[in-house]
Length: 156
Image 1 (tube, helix red, strand yellow):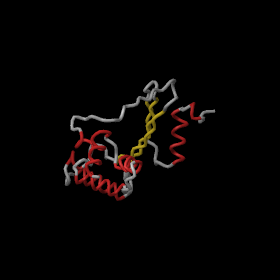
Image 2 (image 1 turned 60 degrees about the vertical axis):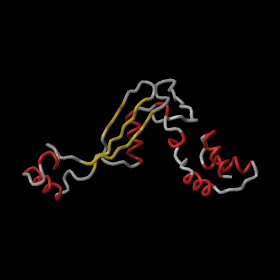
Image 3 (image 1 turned 45 degrees about the horizontal axis):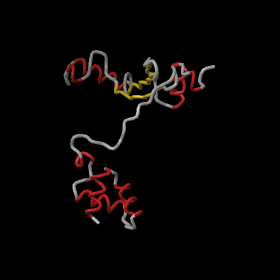
Image 4 (image 1 turned 180 degrees about the vertical axis):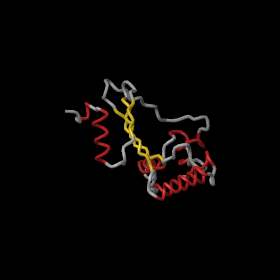
């Protein structure tokens, strides 16, 4: 059975689940976890162990936007707040600037994160970014309204 597992892995480059299915069609019952263990023992558990030159049985697919607004890529990124003039790395841990920033932090001025909402149109690659106060769903929907995504049904 183990030589058959190795043959299936090397020829079709399938996953443990796919090889398990193939063996079940041949009448050999084996669990996916046992299959994974066999692949580890055979040192074939990673795709680059089979073909270190990057061969793959997957074909890349391209997604092309047909018109402006057809595909809009949206991302929300939470970035740590950096004080004006730079942080500790720029000014030093015990500098006057760092002590001033530390005092302001205790007064809850300028603490936390900045939430960057970005939208990129897949057709024209036009980008729009803003930094609202939070990353809640209502804020994200309001951001989409401001970004003007007409094909999402958000504009009046």
